[in-house]
Length: 212
Figure 1 (spheres, rainbow, N blue to C red):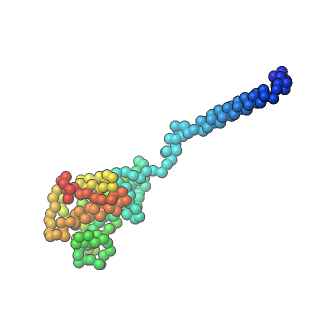
Figure 2 (figure 1 turned 30 degrees about the vertical axis):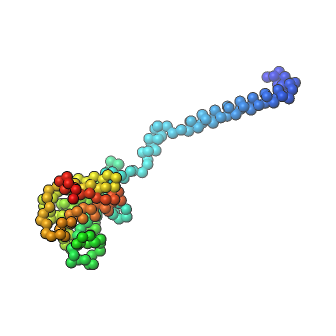
Figure 3 (figure 1 turned 90 degrees about the vertical axis):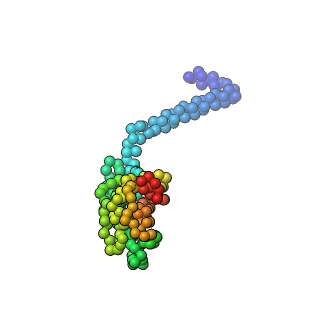
């Protein structure tokens, strides 16, 4: 090494510059490789990634999604990674004689009144709400209240939400129907109950496979 250094001292300036440039280049290359190796050592392993994903917030989206505000205001915890809901709102109807006496949206002959209802714990709150409309009288201080409950020959089958459209499938037949006001009441109750959820932009109701 001393001999090499001595020869470099005796060499002309051009040779010294070339040798110095080579040394500097080697230092840069070695330093870059070391940095790259450290960086690769910091890459997240598969097990680390799995642990991170396991600690992310639970995705509440299922076939239905909770609406905004107090549309669905009570959750009963999380089971098997899915939010479980025990409280929803259902749409009841106050007839023409109650207009101005109860708060709500005016549709057709009636005022739509959204009422809180406890349901059996479920990850699908819209389905739970619709089941209540078809199985519970849902007593109210106004009439017809839950008009759907008077439709003994009508049954709720299922609901699907696709691209913001809630498709509600029912079966059976309407009746008794008395006049123009009754003709729209089933559809209005279903629509308003579904529209409380933020993932629902519109509603389609199918009776025996035919949209009504």
